[in-house]
Length: 170
Image 1 (cartoon, rainbow, N blue to C red):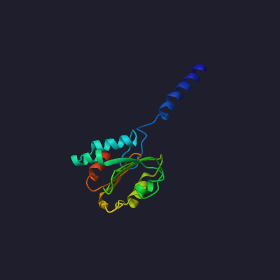
Image 2 (cartoon, rainbow, N blue to C red):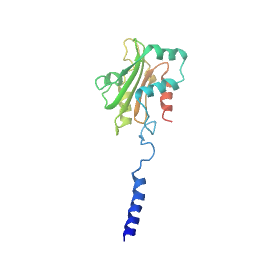
Image 3 (tube, rainbow, N blue to C red):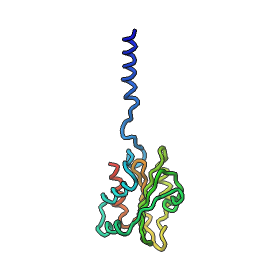
Image 4 (tube, rainbow, N blue to C red):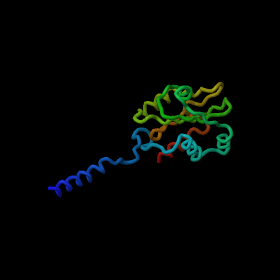
């Protein structure tokens, strides 16, 4: 009887261990990437700038003409045109206005409807948010890789930055 009980418990353990393990990377199946990006938003921003195929003059602009700003619940609408719920946010924007450039990242909360968030940002982000200057609406990019959503507004480097961001999910 004891041998039968031990055999039964061993069988239950053998079946339950694989059932409790996670499969894949635990990412989000919605959007451009299936897995969540590792690291802080600051790390992700650095990877985007490193991977992007940019002109030397724009690389110099990244080093000398841009600053990082934390995106909070209070200032979220000024970046995205809409209030959003998110875990953390970071913007890379010009030190001196009126340069028409913005790259903003948010890490959304678990279970968030990423496609709705992207649609809300695309519909509400203002390509004329700067005094006297703006970007062509065709150069406003909203994408995601896993739980990180990016808004890029740039007439000069938008496509290259978008491509670099999306490559992080591969």
